[in-house]
Length: 204
Image (cartoon, rainbow, N blue to C red; front, side):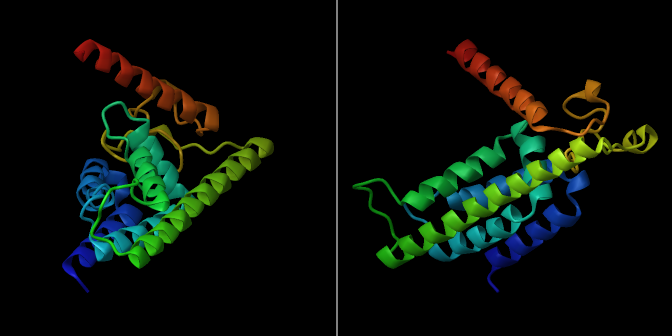
C-alpha cells in the first residue's frame, strides 16, 4: 500500500466515523488529498487519480455522506464548495482534457479515468435520488425526524450537520432542527451564491 493510498484510507475512516466533530479538518483534507489530485490536469498521477476516484465512488454510494458534504460545505457561507468542485472535476475528467492540451496520461489511462469518473457521477446521482425518495416517504408519513434540544446543544458549532438536520447553532439557527427538504437546501445554496457574487463585485 502506498503512502497516498494509506492517507486516503485514513481520510475515509474519518469521514465515515468521525465527521460529527471534524468539519474543519475534513474540509482541509478534502482540499489537500482529493481536490489537489482531481484538479491536476496537466501532470496527473494515474495511480493517485485512480485511488481518489475509487474513494469517491465509495463516498458517492452513501447518500448520507453526500448530503452531509453538500449541506456542511456548499451551503455554509464560510466553507469551500467541496461538493461542487468534486462534481466539476469529475465532469471534466469524464470528457477528457481539452483539445490540444498535452498531458502525461496515455490514451488507455485517459479512457480508464473517464469511465471511472462517469461511474462516480452515477453513484452520486443515485445517492441523491435515494435521499430525495426518503424525504418524500418521511413527508408522506407525517413523522419528521428531530433531535432533543438538550442533546443538540452539546454539539460544537464546527460539527458537521448529520442526516440533513441542522444543529441549533449551525448555518440556520431559526430552523430549530427541522428535517431538511430540497427547497431548504436550494435556499441555503442560493443565499451562499448571492453572497459570493456580492463579494466579487465589492472587491472589483
